[in-house]
Every structure is written in structure tokens, then in C-alpha cells.
Image (cartoon, rainbow, N blue to C red):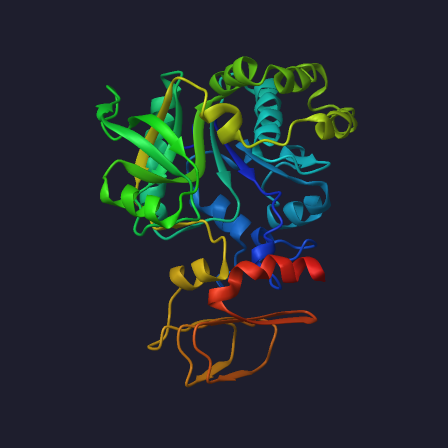
Length: 356
């Protein structure tokens, strides 16, 4: 499986990350930022964690046109022709349809992993083991595999995958048929899911052969399918971008979950536990990072906390920061913006970001 020339990695990197304002802005969203203070951006960490799964020349990034330069700067090892540019945001289905036909034009035997650019994984070795296992399964079948995270709490911010644990795949006993995909639940429903052992968080990581996903689009999204299939003769040529700019805005704004997953027949889940978080909010960053004795997570050079607890501080541009007397607060600074906000009210951050 190591460096298999048919293995391709697709990274979706077009999001705005407005819940992480002011660190994340429309000009430079969170995937292009060293959120964890480790010297690598979330996008770079995403490529890093795939290690030996596929060669650099088989990595693809789909992003918004305004982030083309950021992608090229941060991923110099990825071929420039593999950084595909969306003229507008249309959710994940058009993004995946475009890159799938584009890969098919280069390698009709490709076996693909699709991953978001802004997630966190604490155990990359186990992550790679699970991904390789799923790739081996899809390479020899027409299955679609999604990764399901063992839930650790009744989370209402994630969709769930209901697995049929009595129906394991013949060739891999860690992979099960999917019974259904569930929307983000309310707390009572999430608590019910947690009591059962066959519900997993939907991490938005998919594995499939290019032929499998292209056929699924033909069956379940014929209009979108035709748009991208018709471009096969011009992929990789100077005309490609202009044509994409023309057709992309006409695509339905729909997620791949709605467009394909909820309809397709051969859908499987690989339950996994590798310390995953989607880093969607300041609270999730606090939960996933190292904390001091008082539960404060400090990302920045010289931060002094006095009588504070349960705070997340992200002040990487300041020489010295002193915070006194706060409990369960977000303190984040970037350029000319400073946020001091109760963690209980962090759902309002998106609104504050839009007011700027």
C-alpha cells in the first residue's frame, strides 16, 4: 500500500472558518493558519498525516480562487495543476464531482481519499492504518467507505452514522454496512445515540475508487455529472479554468452527504478512534489542546494567567499578554482585532465576524 501510484488524496480547503474569528478571516481562513502553535498550518498538517499513503504528485487541493496563492505557498510539493480553483462556494458535492472527473482524466484507476483541510488528529499512526485498510477495501470493490469516529460525548455539532454491526465486510471485519446517516441531533437524541454502540460521528472523510464515485454521480446527480463529464477533453489544458468559472455557479449548492451518501447502495463505515476533532469552534480547540493546571489552553509566546480557569487564549502576535480574573473565556487577537468572549456565547462569534 505504501506510495501506491493509484492512491490519490483530495483535500477540500475552500471554507471560511468564521467561527474562529478573529484568528480566521475571509482573507486567511483557519486551514491556512498555525492554529495549534506547532509551526505548521492545519492544511500542512493534513498533508503530513497522510505520510506514505500516496506520493506528493497524487495530492489534490480544491479551494476557492482567492486562496490559490496561499495553497501554492504552503504546499510547494503539490503540483500547481493539482490545485483546483472554485470560482464560488457550492458546498462539497460540486467540489468532489469536479476533482473526481479531473483525476479520472489523469488516472482512471485512481483510488481516492477525500478529507477536509481543517481537522485535527492526535494519533496519526492509527489514522494511517485505518485509511490504508479502507483503501485496500475500496481498491477491490465498488464500495464507498466513510470513517466513523467512536463518540466520546453526546455531541450535537456532528452528524452521525448508524452502522449495522451484524453486517461486517467479508474482506475486512473492521468495516460495516451503513444503515443510515443522521442529521446533527438535539441533545436528547445524541444521548440516545451514545447509549447504543452502533452510532459514530461522521468525520466527512471518504474513500472510494474514482470509477465508483463518478458512477454514483451519474446515477444520483445526472445534471451535475454531465457538466463535469463534458469537460473531459479540456482537463489539464489552458481552457479548463475558464470553463469551470462558467459552469460552477450553475451547480446546485448541495453537500455530498445529501447528493450521494444518502442514496447510494454500497456504503460502508470504518469505525475508528484516532483522536479526531473537526476544530469547528474555539471550544473544540480548547478541548483538544494541552492545558495548564487550571484548564487554560495558551497558544502564544508569553502569556501570564492570574486567577483564570477554563480559558482558551490565542495571541501569537503579542510580545506579552497578562489576563486576570476570567473563567471560561476566549481571548483571541489577530492584526487589528481582539475578541474577548464567554465560551458559553461562542455561537455568536460568526455574527461578530460578519459585522466587520
